[in-house]
Length: 415
Ligand code: SF4
Image 1 (cartoon, rainbow, N blue to C red):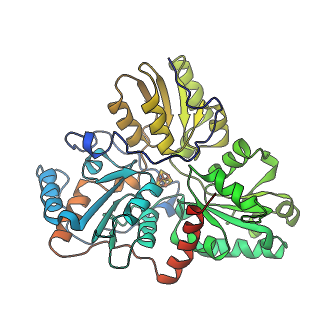
Image 2: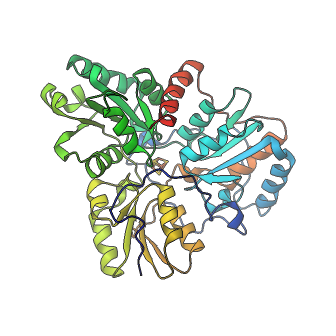
Image 3: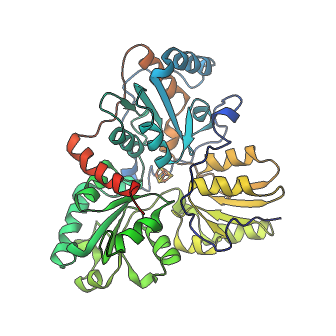
């Protein structure tokens, strides 16, 4: 039996935030993941890892008291502490999260806790930056492992984007181009976006952001520079906005003039930054064909960070929150092949034994940087805070923060 939340295959529309049933309350006892990690990005995308070693004494991963130590430190900190857990985190970390969610929901949750002195963000670097931008200077946002970066966010630097903006200015189109940046970007990119009158978007509201950007009464743009995920930009433009693939061009920051001629720049409606997610980029048409052959009648559900041909071949496309809602709403017996990060897919499979839930690819594929935050790092962070030492604080400078905040506020004001 299958379920269809929407008769039209689509990228999910924004809806009211939901609490995931696979959050902290339903993970009975945290245990380290038994699966070996495939460390994506270590060779293919060297820029994805920040290479920052832990500045303190990490407890051994084999220490049998880790769970007890984390509980004790969390209890000692009480209401001074708020722990955020991204959906892609390990079970052993999610078990200690006060709230789980995607990057935007977690940033909102951080902003909604002004009394919390310490926000421990179990996610990646750009998420902690966003939380710092949205919280007060008195609150400390902490990333348990500073090496937890994001390969996609690292694919666009402030300097590169400024250079490309100059290229657009030379082509005479900067004045009619609106930057739209995915939440999965650094504070510097969000600040660039704010400085140039653009908006941030998430995978849930990318269409609304593009509608606004092209609206004569909104962003007033004739073109959009979409950063840094080419796939989300292309999938939204083509599948939801009715544009053609020819309306989209790829801006390669490693080539002179982005690898484009002036004519290409002037003719394009969507200027897509050449960035991608190392995890979602692994799913292929072969993955889809393979799972359909193995499990007849299976529904393929993928994240819009997947490649265009994969999204086109899927049955449903949607954000992380959409994927969770789709599985929750499905009747028993539904079979799903899910194309997103493996920790989430494994938790969905555990929480819904009445359904058949498989990972879209045969290869074990975690987000390697997200997985850097493990129980030893969490214990070290919590015990340091309980002992009065603030470690691994993430701060965004006031000027960057102000411009980035303008772009985030524009997203919150999207019609
Ligand atoms: S899953 Fe992809 S976009 Fe998300 S944090 Fe990992 S590398 Fe970045």
